[in-house]
Image 1: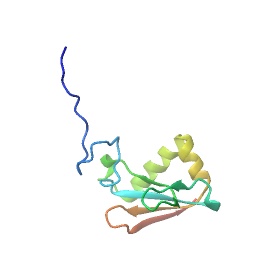
Image 2: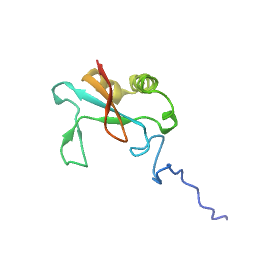
Image 3: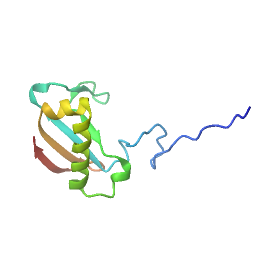
Image 4: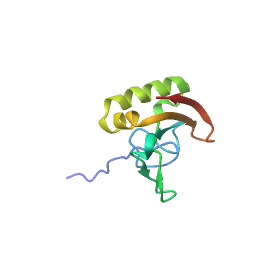
Length: 108
């Protein structure tokens, strides 16, 4: 019986438990501004309810903000939870993840 350890994928920042996106290494952060606060998520950072945020795939960091926004919105339309967020959103803002500057505002 072999006892080889399975290698875990590592993010460039050193985070070991990643799937395809990382809150530290992703270039863009998409925030849903919700209608009537429906669907707000608990923020572990502040301890309060906050507008939900999603990060782009690390492999898409080389793309422009418009291309990433299009790909993210197409992906969200396919999943139930995110399509509900889209339906309850009044605006979507995409921020630059490293410095927090807003890059793109979209009315839904």
